[in-house]
Length: 574
Image (tube, rainbow, N blue to C red; front, side, top):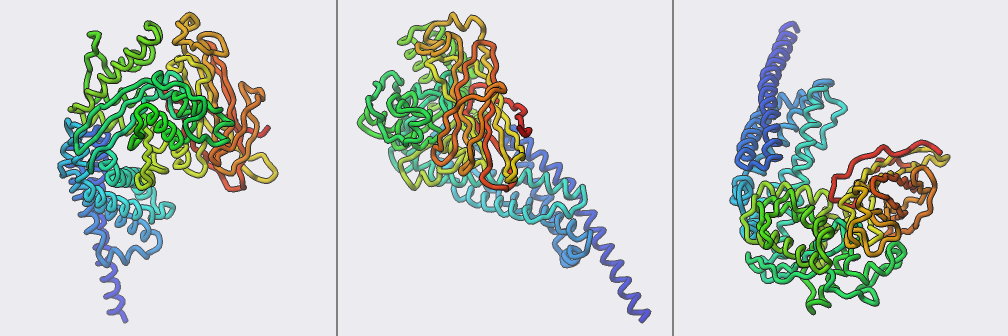
């Protein structure tokens, strides 16, 4: 008996020693892994591909070492012990997830596509490489998905502080990477075909003028037809909104609920196609307008705003204009959306703005482009909803539906079941929204007897135009302006999730009337704000939840030229 106890004791000592030694070695590898992970994040943020490849290689090596140290039968047995078990399991799973992610990403980073993205590139080369990178992207996406799923299985509530913090940090790193790779792998399936990898394709690019806001970003003021054919990219045509005469009847079918919010002008004026948050409707209207112009519908419709044009300019470098001036990314917005309306006549504005747009686009199509600047800028633009894409091909559109490039309504639906949207539409023909500033916020309150939450969406608008804006030319202040010259008149709509109920609407603390419409299944409440130069006004939209489930609201909004800030929203019981 004594001998048996002694043997058991020796075994336990050996096991503890084994776990201690391997645990210490694993801890050292995990410490090095965290340092490498920080380098990965830094290199990714700076779009430094050589540094990123090196950091991923190092992180993968440390993760593989930590996994090998924590994947033996003794360690696995320790995972069932109370207290220490969940932490031991978390260390093993964390190491395994990083090793999985790294091993899947390394072939992609070492590929020609990965190398090209670290320097200069032209669009033709980029499309060719993307078309060939599909299998690598699929493998990397699958590995990242498995890594994210592994981390999801870890119960962080059962972990010690340092282990929990490490797992949370890892989750915050791996999950976005998995999401990005999934999107890239999906894009590789349809982008090359839409852009001419299999034969000629035409893409109608609608440039929104954000100086006169619409829900999708701005009025559709300029149109470019870009053709793609097996790597050859050509700017085939360019027209302005003035080249499309007003239609007596909408050029396409407009839902009654959309008419109730915006009227027939959504379909009778080409400039108003993006009044609706439904980009599929906007794109079909724009396609119909283009068919009237050219007798042929485009193979796809892409909408961008001036910030995307500025991103292209940042990637190409300065561009010389016909008047001898040099256009830079820093000067683009003022050059395109302010100066022409102050200094030029209507016809002169169109000619000048067309020249600016052509110069930037031709330079971008001809390349080379700074890959880092382009990827960084386009990533931010996609996140802000500044790029929308629609295809008449159902197979392609299935990929687009619900994605970040499917328009405002799709962005709201993709943001979660508690997502709200704020939409802005200029109610004049003024071009003053370069001076509009917006802050948004949302607050939850629970004051009802039925225990259903109420959400207040707060929108604060400020007209930062100078006092002399009242003396600006009508092309800037608006030939049609129901207020005084220099005033901003904006229709603000707050959109709730499906099934929610309308509540009160207040402006600066006083109740105001609003249009209440369930458009596309989403309750939409709209009110109008008039702001003189220097003035600020706050709208508050209340909505009632359909049930007693807890609510965690998120917000998406019309992209503006300026950054959108946050504002505290009123959530107290009234």
